[in-house]
Amino acid sequence: MTQFREAVIDLGAVQANVAHLRSLIGTRHTMAVVKANGYGHGAVPVARAALAGGADWLGVADIDEALALRAAGIDAPVLAWLHGPDADFAAAITADIDLGLSSALQVRQVAAVANTLGRPASVQIKLETGLNRNGVDESDWAEVLGLAAAFERVGRLRVRGLFSHLANTSPDDDLAAIASFGRGLEAATAAGLTIDLAHLASTAAALRLPAARYSMVRLGIGIYGQSPFSDADAADLGLTAAMTLRGRVAAVRRVVAGAGVSYDYLWRATVDTTLALVPLGYADGVPRQAMNAARVAINGTQYPVVGRVAMDQFLVDVGADPVAVGDVVVLFGDAAAGVPTAAEWGAAAGTINYDIVTRVGARVPRRYVGPDALTAADTAGAEAAAADDTGSAPPETPRP
Ligand SMILES: *Cc1c(COP(=O)(O)O)cnc(C)c1O
Image (cartoon, rainbow, N blue to C red; front, side, top):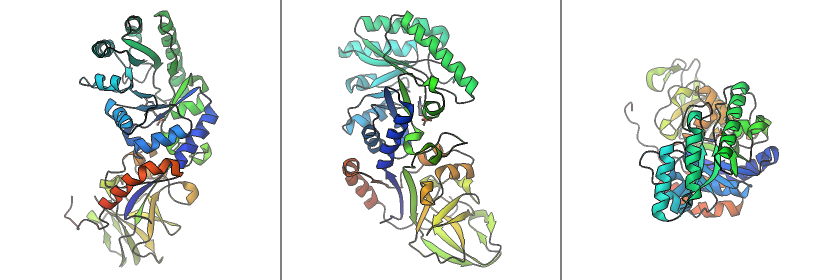
């Protein structure tokens, strides 16, 4: 039964999306990117589903995210690539987490920790090829790769991979980055390294830029059934949206023409109409910017969001239709179900589908559906989360 508010996560869709992308891309290795709580879907269940779909690596931003996968019993290879000055490299090495390293300092730090632990650290060197985030600058490649090779020879490091990340700005910019990455691979060979894993492409380049595929691709948005492109939707790519954000209509009210609706009266009824109250707000990740632009589906019909989105709730104009308290309201899900998509919410809010799914708040219980083998491990946690949801709206409060 549909909860008061819930994000239903179809793990079968994640598994099928990974298998489908793998069949299109055909690289030897496939990394499923499950950073940021699996783009809001739940990192551990998504990781299991992606591995079932044929992924053989998992990618996260920081070490804490990687350790959470290990704590859940996931023993697949994991790469973590974003570290602060106090990063716990010892915990990562002990948990068999590959470290993406972006500087000579990080290479020295990790080698020192590995020495203390008496075991080599498995590392992958991140090269700067045009994005200008982290990564070793081309002018430092010889030094850093040479240093890594020296530590490898004395058993402190195992340099398993070389990687970078594209800006997705234009084909020309990405081809320049590919050329740069090629020089990086040559520099690694010149430094005496044998690179097993070379990877540059996330979902977009994995699909459209075969030259960026190398031995592994890092697939994020695509495994969640969302398109990285503005000119192709998920269905065009053969993907199924894994997340459906939905709830139950909490109140229904008739208003007369001229009535102002929600804070600041930024929408007024032009005719007598019916409003349905949806119990999700910006605390749950519903963007305030979607006011008067996004749509929801109730009983198979799509209706516009009207007036300000509040912290816990917003209104939709259902006209003369017979909508009742308790009816299921779907904010977004898979287009094949006749409901709005996360991409449409992104367009309505001046953002992207990545942001819409990832921002779904902690108050929204995740409920996992799909093959028993995938959902069994998560049912207990989801039920506990659902039990925490009291099913009643917080009292109407003054302007938050
Ligand atoms: C997030 C991320 C990805 C995944 O990108 P998608 O566009 O979601 O496929 C891949 N690589 C790195 C370094 C990332 O930060």
